[in-house]
Image (tube, rainbow, N blue to C red):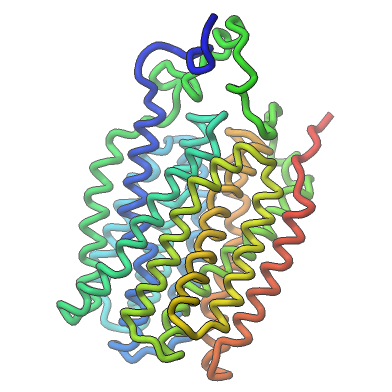
Length: 426
């Protein structure tokens, strides 16, 4: 009798785990040393260039809007050209933007244009949707777990990038040195993309390395089947947009992303305004990103064991509690703990919400939903960084921004409580 590990499995090395390693590294390099680098490089740019915080923050808001508007293009390319070509194009755009940051940005409008438009487009073309699409194609039973592993790469890279880039900027007395290092990491990522294989069927394999016909013939053990809901329906766009599930997911996405974007943009400034040194604030944000990374694999594993509405609810609640502590905390040890807990909640949601989309609506609908999702969600989330900046300029503190973010997370908790798999159309 076949064992659980052998039931239905096809012979030969399963390439899905190679893809996991490749996407882990790409997220480590391109996301960790580029996207997450923003929180430590941006304050130095603002101070060095003597820019207004609110005006300079527009670059991040424009980037998020561009990211959202580019998602239909990303979804189209993923459907027509596959993950490898899509992410390769995105990395080339990202490299172009970083080189312009190193050699071309001298004015505020340069910064807004390059970061807001060019880098925003690159984030859309290289964003988590690419890695998540690949994982949803290659895995079903371990879907949330593998998404968690891949998404850990960006957080680990970001945690390492924070102190490393802060140190390099101090050494060379220039924020341009940080973007030069980021560009080098993108070049290495471009090499790794050449090894990506889009789908199991491209090389005659199956998701999870399990041939459905062989597994059925061998009476595959129940332990080798998914423990949480997986749709068997091929969802169409018309069917999806009629389901409340989609809009509850949008509320969750706007809330947790908007809160994180605002803190990423202004968290270091809030801490330095409170009396911390720049290197201390950078260290706390390094811990925040580390907490995000450490939570992703456990969250993914938990998402394969427990229905996702409850893990989503718990992750949002953790963010809300930690944000309150981050707002009111004064001691470095408390701020460090709150930062790690906030990061853990955010990192969990980065894994669990995409897994919920894939589980509830299926593999083929995943990039389509993200194409619909992002242009609606991200403009709202994008308002948070600029909004927080202008709140500070108007009031001299971030108090109203923190209070608004906690209210937003409370709405997301309510949405998660009512989130259930959509009823299959008759």
